[in-house]
Image (tube, rainbow, N blue to C red; front, top):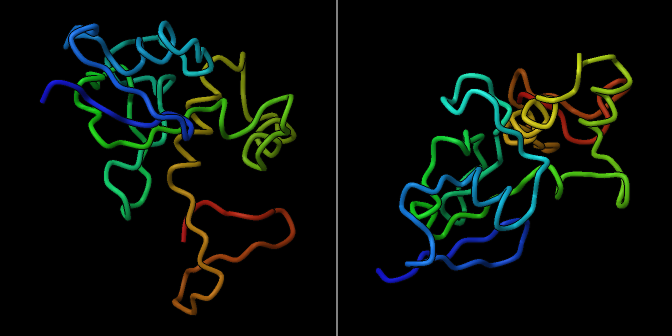
Amino acid sequence: MDCVTFKVNGEEFTVGSDVSSTTTLLEYLRTRLELRGTKYMCLEGGCGACIVSVVKCPGLNPEAVNSCLVSVTSCQGWEVTTIEHVGNRLKGYHPLQTTLAESNGSQCGYCSPGWVMSMYSGMVVDLSSSRPGSRRPGPGRPGPVVGG
């Protein structure tokens, strides 16, 4: 395979010999695409500051991925969503972001984007489900909810 093609926030990108196989997805997002909402800290996958939401194959559920542990050349066919796409000052914040802020759910805020992306990846919306334990939107649980 000469090139690796993937999407970031709905936009398609292709990398090839112009990118080293040691370039992480985190590094690519921050330096090449200038998406600096995804943070770096431990670079070992332990802190969660670098989490992005990824659909690895069409039809699969999104999953939280530590972008510091993934080579960008292994992202063939992936759909990557970063914090910039989830919500921001210009287009408005996602309910996860507003709930976190309103509930004093962060300290300095540096790793908050990773927290949001982890929760965002695990969101389950199944309003037609009658299975026990399914959760529906309601007071204090606007729109999509975590769990399910």
